[in-house]
Image (cartoon, rainbow, N blue to C red; front, top):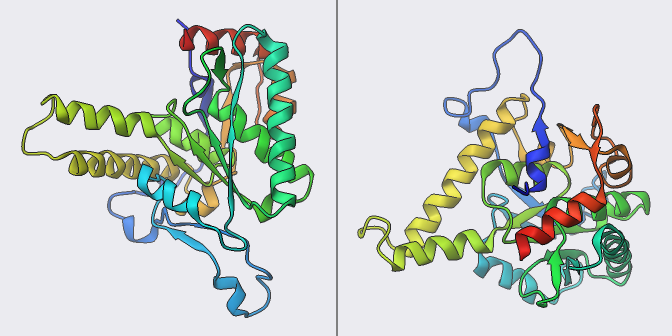
Length: 276
């Protein structure tokens, strides 16, 4: 069966003698708060440094994503970039699509669109979504190399991510926030069909789901002794098992893959099988 790319990544853990953080008893010292925006100069006490969007956690609802998308203020303008490739083009088409994605994201940041929304929603029938993790990491690494990563935020609008591990890998490889729209829509449909407890409304069910993701993220971060999401983001505290060196060095620079494995051809094939 084709595997999601997240399955190839395993989080490391702090190899120390003292016990890890307890995310339940020590919740007060842990934080999932995140900010979007670029302070003008963090070494200077300036009101301009407060021009940020504050999110209590990195799981963004459909409604909040639309609010962010509609912002038209300097420093908070967004651009939505579709992450897809030709379903019949194989690894070559995937590589070309990633190159285009990186170029479009860089040009957008230089043109003043500092919020990059990578989306696999409403794709054409003949296209396959680029794995969200591959798209996020590729864009993240490219913006770092071009020296503009601190000026941008990367939001992921994906139907692929649904589990705590999925969110953790996306955040660990550069995502600022994640909108798992398909998970939200699935929960709403379950409520509508009466699959869940009839006392639970659609809104409450989604709140419970987001709460579970947040609890899970705290648990995952605690295994590395990390207490804030801002320290966990982009830390790449993972190793890959089963991904080839060419893909890792190009799109996941800094993450180890000791035994090698699949390349873009296999990733494209697995993605297309899931699509069709």
